[in-house]
Amino acid sequence: MDWRIIAVPIVGAVIGYITNWVAVKMLFYPHYEKKIWGHRVPFTPGVIPRGQGRLARAVGQVVEKQLLTPEVLGGVLLSEETCAKLRQAVVDWTGEMKNGQMQVKDAALLVMEEDRYEGTLKATGENLSAFLYEKILAMDPAAKIVEAGMSVVREKLADSMFGFMLGGSFMDKIGDQMREYVDAFIKENLPALLEEEVAKEVSAISDKRVGEIFETLEKQGADLPDIIEQIYRVLVAEKLPVILTAVRFSDIVEDRINAMDVAQVEELVLVIMKKELGAVINIGALIGFILGLVNVAILMLPA
Image (tube, rainbow, N blue to C red; front, side):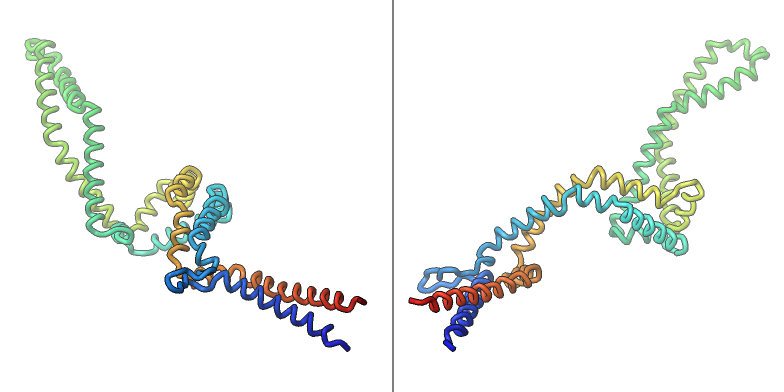
């Protein structure tokens, strides 16, 4: 038996295997540029390390434009399954709060520093006081108070000599002077009174249990899980594109890949394509074996 019938295909398979193995390794190695006498050695660094920036940019674009689009994320975030999980999480959380002793202040301090919380509390009181002050002034309380008082005075003096002597025009002048006095008194004293009372109420709310607040809202007919779910749906539907534009997933992914060490990039690629790259090497061996058989067939042809 001619040894070439076996040897040539085997040698071809080995050569094909080694060639593709080297080609796959050259995708990653060497990790860094090599130089001899100041000149870069050809094919260094490997294909992927040399193109790490392009890879990062391409992956970032794919993630942003094809994988994490507003339509895709919106579909996931607004799916019935996701909303049901959110609602159940809210139900569980409110149940824990109602059975717990956590105060509103303690809950707020979980998400902000104490100085910021105190500033927020103060600002809330001031804004609420200013809002109430403007609303009260808009109702012209001085005019209403004096009008009600003068109406009683006129009624009491209607059938008396004193009322007849004063007359309507004189009573109107008294009413105007009283209205000016009451209006000045309200404008001078109301802001401080409102700030004091509002501060007391805000402080009282701060010291209440979170569960107590929830129970009060529920007694008034508020469905907290439903309210939070509706707010969530509106935010996702209306603000998700804006949020994604601001977040820029492509930039995040690109920066993360560029910040990786070359070995980490290699590991990332291998996690995704290890089987495929192994198949490429094995195909090289198969092609080499087939070409070896072709060579044997040619050599065996009669001269």
